Length: 335
Image 1 (cartoon, rainbow, N blue to C red):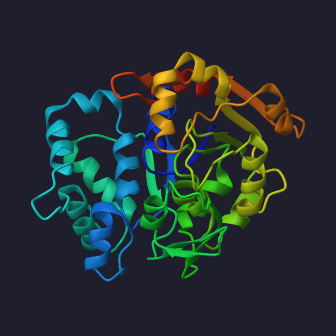
Image 2: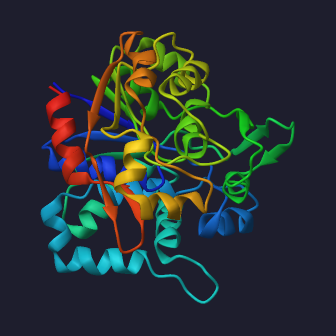
Protein backbone atom coordinates (compact mmCIF):
# COMPACT_ATOMS: atom_id res chain seq x y z
CA UNK A 1 0.00 0.00 0.00
CA UNK A 2 1.36 3.41 -0.99
CA UNK A 3 1.76 5.80 1.94
CA UNK A 4 2.88 9.27 0.88
CA UNK A 5 4.23 11.93 3.21
CA UNK A 6 4.92 15.48 2.07
CA UNK A 7 7.20 17.82 4.00
CA UNK A 8 6.76 21.53 3.38
CA UNK A 9 4.46 24.51 3.51
CA UNK A 10 4.14 27.95 1.96
CA UNK A 11 2.81 27.91 -1.60
CA UNK A 12 4.91 24.94 -2.75
CA UNK A 13 3.44 22.13 -0.65
CA UNK A 14 -0.21 22.85 -1.58
CA UNK A 15 0.72 22.57 -5.28
CA UNK A 16 2.39 19.21 -4.65
CA UNK A 17 -0.65 18.03 -2.67
CA UNK A 18 -3.04 19.03 -5.45
CA UNK A 19 -0.79 17.27 -7.96
CA UNK A 20 -0.81 14.08 -5.89
CA UNK A 21 -4.59 14.13 -5.61
CA UNK A 22 -4.97 14.73 -9.36
CA UNK A 23 -2.62 11.77 -9.90
CA UNK A 24 -5.10 9.61 -7.98
CA UNK A 25 -3.31 9.30 -4.64
CA UNK A 26 -5.22 9.49 -1.35
CA UNK A 27 -4.54 9.19 2.37
CA UNK A 28 -1.63 11.62 2.08
CA UNK A 29 0.08 12.84 5.25
CA UNK A 30 1.06 16.49 4.84
CA UNK A 31 3.61 17.66 7.44
CA UNK A 32 4.38 21.36 7.79
CA UNK A 33 6.12 23.75 10.14
CA UNK A 34 4.34 25.60 12.93
CA UNK A 35 6.96 28.32 13.45
CA UNK A 36 5.96 31.08 11.03
CA UNK A 37 6.28 34.53 12.58
CA UNK A 38 5.40 36.75 9.63
CA UNK A 39 2.22 38.24 8.19
CA UNK A 40 -1.13 37.67 9.82
CA UNK A 41 0.07 34.56 11.65
CA UNK A 42 2.88 36.60 13.19
CA UNK A 43 0.37 39.17 14.44
CA UNK A 44 -1.64 36.45 16.19
CA UNK A 45 1.42 34.76 17.69
CA UNK A 46 2.66 38.13 18.93
CA UNK A 47 -0.73 38.94 20.47
CA UNK A 48 -0.66 35.56 22.20
CA UNK A 49 2.93 36.17 23.40
CA UNK A 50 4.20 33.23 21.32
CA UNK A 51 2.14 30.74 23.31
CA UNK A 52 0.48 29.31 20.19
CA UNK A 53 1.81 27.60 17.09
CA UNK A 54 1.51 29.06 13.61
CA UNK A 55 -1.36 27.52 11.63
CA UNK A 56 -0.95 29.26 8.26
CA UNK A 57 0.82 26.36 6.53
CA UNK A 58 -1.37 23.85 8.33
CA UNK A 59 -4.55 25.46 7.03
CA UNK A 60 -3.18 25.89 3.50
CA UNK A 61 -2.17 22.24 3.34
CA UNK A 62 -5.53 21.13 4.69
CA UNK A 63 -7.43 23.10 2.05
CA UNK A 64 -5.17 21.63 -0.64
CA UNK A 65 -6.29 18.16 0.48
CA UNK A 66 -9.89 18.87 -0.52
CA UNK A 67 -11.20 16.46 -3.17
CA UNK A 68 -11.41 18.35 -6.50
CA UNK A 69 -15.17 17.82 -6.84
CA UNK A 70 -15.87 19.27 -3.39
CA UNK A 71 -14.38 22.63 -4.36
CA UNK A 72 -17.36 23.19 -6.65
CA UNK A 73 -19.87 22.79 -3.81
CA UNK A 74 -21.51 26.08 -2.85
CA UNK A 75 -21.03 25.60 0.90
CA UNK A 76 -17.34 24.78 0.43
CA UNK A 77 -16.86 27.80 -1.85
CA UNK A 78 -18.54 30.07 0.69
CA UNK A 79 -16.43 28.63 3.51
CA UNK A 80 -13.11 29.08 1.69
CA UNK A 81 -14.07 32.66 0.81
CA UNK A 82 -14.74 33.30 4.50
CA UNK A 83 -11.36 31.83 5.44
CA UNK A 84 -9.58 34.28 3.15
CA UNK A 85 -11.30 37.35 4.58
CA UNK A 86 -9.29 39.80 6.69
CA UNK A 87 -10.79 42.66 8.68
CA UNK A 88 -9.56 46.23 9.01
CA UNK A 89 -7.08 45.23 11.70
CA UNK A 90 -5.50 42.62 9.42
CA UNK A 91 -7.01 39.73 11.40
CA UNK A 92 -7.64 36.74 9.16
CA UNK A 93 -10.98 35.02 9.71
CA UNK A 94 -9.65 31.62 8.66
CA UNK A 95 -6.89 31.66 11.26
CA UNK A 96 -9.33 32.92 13.91
CA UNK A 97 -11.71 30.05 13.20
CA UNK A 98 -8.91 27.48 13.21
CA UNK A 99 -7.41 28.76 16.49
CA UNK A 100 -10.88 28.71 18.08
CA UNK A 101 -11.38 25.10 16.99
CA UNK A 102 -7.93 24.17 18.31
CA UNK A 103 -8.91 25.60 21.68
CA UNK A 104 -12.27 23.82 21.60
CA UNK A 105 -10.64 20.47 20.83
CA UNK A 106 -7.67 20.96 23.18
CA UNK A 107 -5.05 21.34 20.42
CA UNK A 108 -6.08 18.12 18.67
CA UNK A 109 -5.62 19.26 15.05
CA UNK A 110 -6.88 15.95 13.67
CA UNK A 111 -10.11 16.42 15.61
CA UNK A 112 -10.32 19.92 14.12
CA UNK A 113 -9.98 18.36 10.68
CA UNK A 114 -12.78 15.88 11.44
CA UNK A 115 -14.97 18.71 12.68
CA UNK A 116 -14.42 20.64 9.44
CA UNK A 117 -15.22 17.53 7.42
CA UNK A 118 -18.49 17.17 9.29
CA UNK A 119 -19.28 20.87 8.89
CA UNK A 120 -18.61 20.86 5.13
CA UNK A 121 -19.92 17.38 4.37
CA UNK A 122 -16.67 16.30 2.71
CA UNK A 123 -13.72 14.05 3.43
CA UNK A 124 -10.19 15.32 2.88
CA UNK A 125 -7.82 13.17 0.83
CA UNK A 126 -5.33 12.92 3.67
CA UNK A 127 -4.27 14.48 6.94
CA UNK A 128 -2.61 17.86 7.52
CA UNK A 129 -0.40 17.94 10.60
CA UNK A 130 2.15 20.30 12.13
CA UNK A 131 5.61 18.89 12.72
CA UNK A 132 5.32 20.08 16.33
CA UNK A 133 2.44 21.20 18.53
CA UNK A 134 4.72 23.23 20.81
CA UNK A 135 5.49 26.93 20.17
CA UNK A 136 9.01 27.50 18.89
CA UNK A 137 11.04 30.10 17.03
CA UNK A 138 13.21 29.38 14.01
CA UNK A 139 16.65 31.00 14.24
CA UNK A 140 19.25 31.68 11.55
CA UNK A 141 22.91 32.56 11.45
CA UNK A 142 24.33 34.16 8.33
CA UNK A 143 27.77 33.82 6.83
CA UNK A 144 28.61 37.18 8.36
CA UNK A 145 27.86 35.83 11.82
CA UNK A 146 24.58 37.73 12.26
CA UNK A 147 21.88 35.81 14.16
CA UNK A 148 18.21 36.36 13.28
CA UNK A 149 15.20 35.21 15.30
CA UNK A 150 11.91 34.46 13.55
CA UNK A 151 10.99 33.34 10.06
CA UNK A 152 9.91 36.88 9.18
CA UNK A 153 13.59 37.85 9.39
CA UNK A 154 14.41 35.27 6.73
CA UNK A 155 11.88 36.93 4.43
CA UNK A 156 13.04 40.42 5.38
CA UNK A 157 16.60 39.71 4.29
CA UNK A 158 15.73 37.54 1.29
CA UNK A 159 17.72 39.80 -1.07
CA UNK A 160 20.75 40.02 1.19
CA UNK A 161 24.12 38.75 -0.04
CA UNK A 162 24.83 37.56 3.52
CA UNK A 163 23.63 34.00 3.01
CA UNK A 164 22.14 31.77 5.68
CA UNK A 165 24.62 29.17 6.92
CA UNK A 166 22.96 27.64 9.96
CA UNK A 167 19.41 27.19 11.22
CA UNK A 168 17.93 25.88 14.47
CA UNK A 169 14.86 26.28 16.67
CA UNK A 170 14.42 27.65 20.19
CA UNK A 171 13.37 25.94 22.32
CA UNK A 172 14.18 22.50 20.94
CA UNK A 173 10.65 21.08 20.91
CA UNK A 174 9.56 17.49 20.18
CA UNK A 175 7.88 16.46 16.94
CA UNK A 176 4.25 15.37 17.10
CA UNK A 177 3.69 11.60 17.46
CA UNK A 178 1.56 11.70 14.30
CA UNK A 179 4.40 13.21 12.26
CA UNK A 180 6.89 10.66 13.59
CA UNK A 181 4.53 7.77 12.83
CA UNK A 182 3.79 9.08 9.33
CA UNK A 183 7.50 9.36 8.47
CA UNK A 184 8.44 5.93 9.81
CA UNK A 185 5.56 4.21 7.98
CA UNK A 186 5.84 6.11 4.68
CA UNK A 187 6.62 4.36 1.41
CA UNK A 188 7.34 7.69 -0.31
CA UNK A 189 8.49 10.93 1.28
CA UNK A 190 8.47 14.15 -0.73
CA UNK A 191 10.45 17.28 0.15
CA UNK A 192 8.35 20.04 -1.40
CA UNK A 193 9.61 23.20 -3.08
CA UNK A 194 9.45 26.42 -1.11
CA UNK A 195 11.65 28.43 1.23
CA UNK A 196 14.41 25.88 1.71
CA UNK A 197 14.98 26.82 5.34
CA UNK A 198 11.64 28.26 6.47
CA UNK A 199 9.29 25.75 4.80
CA UNK A 200 11.36 22.57 4.44
CA UNK A 201 14.47 22.33 6.63
CA UNK A 202 12.52 23.72 9.62
CA UNK A 203 10.51 20.47 9.60
CA UNK A 204 13.68 18.48 10.23
CA UNK A 205 14.64 20.35 13.41
CA UNK A 206 12.21 19.14 16.14
CA UNK A 207 13.34 16.24 18.33
CA UNK A 208 12.56 12.84 16.88
CA UNK A 209 12.45 13.72 13.20
CA UNK A 210 16.01 12.62 12.39
CA UNK A 211 15.52 9.27 14.11
CA UNK A 212 12.24 8.75 12.26
CA UNK A 213 14.00 9.44 8.95
CA UNK A 214 16.69 6.89 9.83
CA UNK A 215 14.03 4.29 10.61
CA UNK A 216 12.06 5.05 7.47
CA UNK A 217 12.53 2.89 4.39
CA UNK A 218 10.61 5.37 2.22
CA UNK A 219 11.78 6.42 -1.21
CA UNK A 220 12.79 10.04 -0.62
CA UNK A 221 12.02 12.53 -3.39
CA UNK A 222 13.27 16.11 -3.59
CA UNK A 223 11.36 18.53 -5.81
CA UNK A 224 13.78 21.41 -6.27
CA UNK A 225 12.83 25.07 -6.35
CA UNK A 226 12.37 26.76 -9.71
CA UNK A 227 13.91 30.09 -8.72
CA UNK A 228 16.75 30.95 -6.37
CA UNK A 229 16.51 33.16 -3.28
CA UNK A 230 19.55 35.38 -2.76
CA UNK A 231 20.19 34.61 0.91
CA UNK A 232 19.23 30.92 0.68
CA UNK A 233 19.99 29.22 -2.63
CA UNK A 234 22.22 31.59 -4.61
CA UNK A 235 24.59 29.59 -6.85
CA UNK A 236 23.03 26.36 -5.56
CA UNK A 237 23.86 23.18 -7.44
CA UNK A 238 22.27 19.74 -7.03
CA UNK A 239 25.26 18.78 -4.90
CA UNK A 240 24.56 21.75 -2.60
CA UNK A 241 21.05 20.38 -2.07
CA UNK A 242 22.59 16.98 -1.31
CA UNK A 243 24.97 18.40 1.30
CA UNK A 244 22.31 20.58 2.90
CA UNK A 245 19.89 17.69 3.32
CA UNK A 246 22.67 15.44 4.57
CA UNK A 247 23.34 17.98 7.32
CA UNK A 248 19.76 18.39 8.50
CA UNK A 249 18.35 14.89 7.94
CA UNK A 250 21.38 13.17 9.46
CA UNK A 251 21.27 10.73 6.55
CA UNK A 252 24.23 9.73 4.42
CA UNK A 253 21.77 9.34 1.54
CA UNK A 254 19.19 12.12 2.07
CA UNK A 255 17.15 11.58 -1.10
CA UNK A 256 16.84 8.96 -3.84
CA UNK A 257 15.15 10.97 -6.59
CA UNK A 258 15.54 14.61 -7.57
CA UNK A 259 12.87 16.29 -9.70
CA UNK A 260 14.54 19.09 -11.64
CA UNK A 261 13.61 21.36 -14.57
CA UNK A 262 14.29 20.16 -18.10
CA UNK A 263 16.10 23.40 -18.99
CA UNK A 264 19.44 24.73 -17.85
CA UNK A 265 19.62 28.28 -16.56
CA UNK A 266 21.16 29.46 -19.84
CA UNK A 267 18.48 27.77 -21.96
CA UNK A 268 15.69 29.17 -19.79
CA UNK A 269 17.02 32.72 -19.99
CA UNK A 270 17.12 32.50 -23.78
CA UNK A 271 13.59 31.13 -24.00
CA UNK A 272 12.01 33.28 -21.27
CA UNK A 273 14.15 36.42 -21.25
CA UNK A 274 11.42 38.70 -19.82
CA UNK A 275 10.76 36.37 -16.89
CA UNK A 276 14.48 36.02 -16.24
CA UNK A 277 14.90 39.81 -16.28
CA UNK A 278 12.00 40.20 -13.85
CA UNK A 279 13.54 37.77 -11.34
CA UNK A 280 16.95 39.38 -11.77
CA UNK A 281 15.54 42.53 -10.16
CA UNK A 282 15.11 40.41 -7.02
CA UNK A 283 18.63 38.97 -7.38
CA UNK A 284 17.05 35.65 -8.32
CA UNK A 285 17.42 33.35 -11.29
CA UNK A 286 16.09 30.08 -12.73
CA UNK A 287 17.41 27.01 -10.92
CA UNK A 288 18.13 24.83 -13.92
CA UNK A 289 21.36 22.90 -14.30
CA UNK A 290 23.71 21.56 -16.91
CA UNK A 291 24.27 17.85 -17.46
CA UNK A 292 27.62 18.15 -15.68
CA UNK A 293 26.03 19.73 -12.59
CA UNK A 294 23.34 17.05 -12.43
CA UNK A 295 25.98 14.34 -12.82
CA UNK A 296 27.36 15.31 -9.41
CA UNK A 297 24.38 13.72 -7.66
CA UNK A 298 23.62 11.16 -10.37
CA UNK A 299 27.01 9.64 -9.61
CA UNK A 300 25.86 9.22 -6.01
CA UNK A 301 23.05 6.95 -7.21
CA UNK A 302 20.32 9.60 -7.30
CA UNK A 303 17.78 9.25 -10.08
CA UNK A 304 17.28 12.57 -11.86
CA UNK A 305 13.80 13.30 -13.18
CA UNK A 306 14.21 16.22 -15.56
CA UNK A 307 10.83 17.43 -16.72
CA UNK A 308 8.64 20.30 -17.85
CA UNK A 309 6.62 20.51 -14.63
CA UNK A 310 6.26 24.29 -14.47
CA UNK A 311 4.27 27.03 -16.17
CA UNK A 312 5.20 30.66 -16.78
CA UNK A 313 2.62 33.32 -15.97
CA UNK A 314 3.49 35.70 -18.78
CA UNK A 315 1.16 38.44 -17.54
CA UNK A 316 3.14 38.78 -14.31
CA UNK A 317 6.47 37.38 -15.53
CA UNK A 318 6.44 34.73 -12.82
CA UNK A 319 7.08 31.00 -12.76
CA UNK A 320 5.19 28.33 -10.82
CA UNK A 321 5.09 24.56 -10.51
CA UNK A 322 2.11 23.32 -12.51
CA UNK A 323 -0.08 20.85 -10.56
CA UNK A 324 -1.37 19.13 -13.71
CA UNK A 325 2.09 18.64 -15.18
CA UNK A 326 3.50 17.63 -11.81
CA UNK A 327 0.66 15.11 -11.38
CA UNK A 328 1.82 13.25 -14.49
CA UNK A 329 5.40 13.21 -13.23
CA UNK A 330 4.46 11.93 -9.76
CA UNK A 331 2.10 9.30 -11.13
CA UNK A 332 4.91 7.93 -13.28
CA UNK A 333 7.40 7.95 -10.40
CA UNK A 334 5.30 6.61 -7.51
CA UNK A 335 4.28 3.02 -8.11
